[in-house]
Image 1: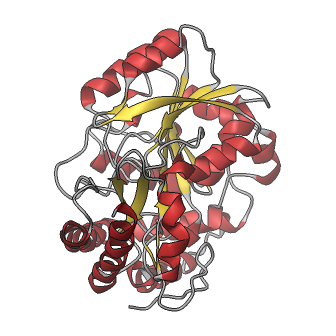
Image 2: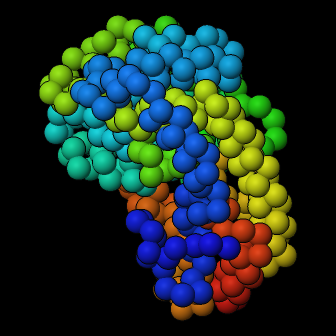
Length: 382
C-alpha cells in the first residue's frame, strides 16, 4: 500500500498502524480523474472562476451540485439553498463566528467529533452534552435541557456518527425538528458521511427539513473525493443562506474556493464523482468485513462493537473500569494506535471506549492492526 507517513495530520513512525486515522488512504485519492477534470475546466475560454466569486459560491458549481444532490436525496435541492465552504471544519468555524459570542452555550452530542469540540473551545463556547443511543441523539433529554437553556445552536452528526457510528432514526429526526422548531433553535447537522452507506439506505438527509426549523446541513468532498480539496457546502433555507452570505468575510474575499469549485464541477459533470463514491463503497465494504472479522478473532469477549452500516468508524466499548488512554502508550510501543474515548467527550467521560477506523489501511494492515491491538487489550484486561 502506498502511504506517505508525512502527510499533514499524519506523522507516523515506520511500521505504525494508527487505527484512529479518519481519512482515506493515498490509493483511494482519484488523482487521474482530478487531472482530467482540471484539464477539462482549464480548457474553457471563460475564466470567471479565477476572479473573486459570488458570496454564496461559484454559481455554475452550485447548480451542478444541486442537481447531483437532488439525485441523492428524496427532495429536490435548489442552488439558492447552497453556500459553498472550504470544508466542514471551516464551515463550523464560520457558523460559530456568525451565530455565537464567547460564553454562549452550544449543545453537542455525547460522544461528539473531537475536533469540532476543539473549534468550539477556540470560540470559548460553553458546551452542554446530550447523550446518544443506538437511534442517535436522545430527543427526550434534549427537550428537557431546553426547558432551562437557550443555546445558540445544536451540533449533531446524524448519519454514521463520528465516533459512535450510529444513525439518527427517521422518527427521531422528525421529533428533533419539531422540538427545534418550537424553540427556534438552529440545528447544525454534520452530514459528511451521509453518502457512504454500505448496507441499508439511511434516512433522508437533515436537509430534507430545512423548511421546518432553523437548520444547516453540512456536506463535504473530503470523504467522497479528496480532503486536500478543502471544499464542502452548507444546505439551508434560502433566507438563511442569504443571511450568511452577507458576512464581512464573504463580502471582502468573495465566495469560498471558486477555482477548486470549478474543477469539482467538472468532476461531477464528467461522471467521476458518482463513480468514485461507488468505488469507495465497494472498497470500504470489503475493509469493514476483514477488519470486523479480525477484531472478533483477536479482541477479548469483553470488547463490544457493532458492524457499521456506513461512514468510517467502529466504536469499541470495554468494561467500565477500563481507561483506554491508560494503555495507549503501551499500544504505541507495539506499533498500533487508536483514539481513546475521552477525547470525544467534552466532560472527559467515555474512558472505556475507543474509536477505530478502516479508511486509511488496506485489508492486510487492518488484520495486523487488529492482532496487535487485541494483544494489548487482552494483557490489560487480564
